[in-house]
Amino acid sequence: MLNIAYRHLRAPLAHAGRCQSQCAADCPVLAFESALAEPVLQSEIEAARREEERFKALAAALNKGRDG
Image (cartoon, rainbow, N blue to C red; front, side):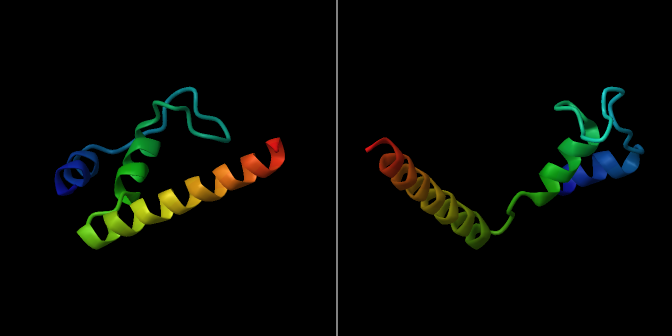
């Protein structure tokens, strides 16, 4: 994580040429902000995994109710 931050802070970031009101998929600024938003601590990683599983179960239940 620190390596990512160091690499981006050392050289100024610039948006990709295709960025307008929303960043393009390969925008360096978007990639940097996404990397910084990732959980770092094991407890954060586990909490994010549990939250994702909860959302998947909720989505499956909603889809089942809509289909059935």
